Picture 1 (spheres, rainbow, N blue to C red):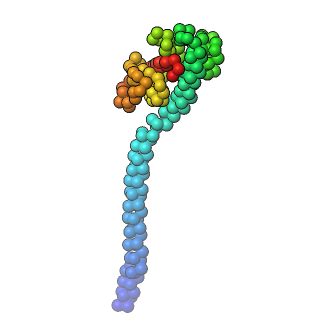
Picture 2 (picture 1 turned 135 degrees about the vertical axis):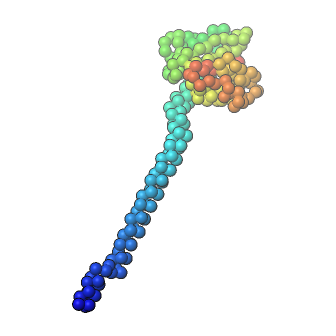
Picture 3 (picture 1 turned 180 degrees about the vertical axis):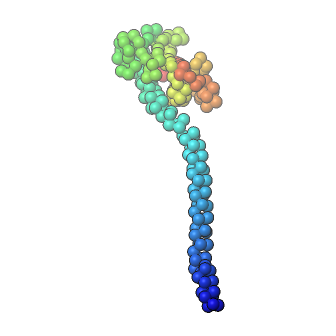
Amino acid sequence: MQVQQHHVSLHDRPTARRRATVVARGRAGQLLRRQAGLTMIEMVFFLVVFGVLIALIFPKLADIPSKLTANSDLQDFQSLITSYGAVLDRNPSTAQASAADAIANVAVPTTYKVNTTTLRNAFGGAVTIAPSGTNTTTDFSTTALPRIACQQFATALGKAPLLVSVNGTALKADVSSQITNTALNTACVDTKTNTILVTRARGA
């Protein structure tokens, strides 16, 4: 009888191996839960960092098309000033200076020409030419520029021997002065209504 009781108790009692297996499974479950929690935290952290980077980079990416258009249009405007300026220098005065005269003298970029009297830039703004001073200087203006183009135009044109105004404010009142970043940032506005006026003296 005692032998049978001893046999039953051995059969019902969990072995050390079974206990070890249960403990191991419990620890493995805890580890998996911890790993899942860390993965979720890492995912949230990644999304936050990604969102910050997008917020910083997207405005710059959005500016790329405008920058490319501004670069191309700036080259055309500089070409107009140089080409037509050379035509005007062959005359005793700049009294005849106009878009129509520039077109007639084939001194206009093809991208600017609308008809025999009208010029427009890549942004759809009017490009005008007129005599100024005592017919010894010529005003070249380009309108409807976005802020980024306004800044590019004024910066580049300010390096030439030209007088430069932005939206009626003289940023370069004499050919030896420099345009400051502070003045440029203040003069160019965020809307696509900026106007650049350049005054070129004969022989410049």
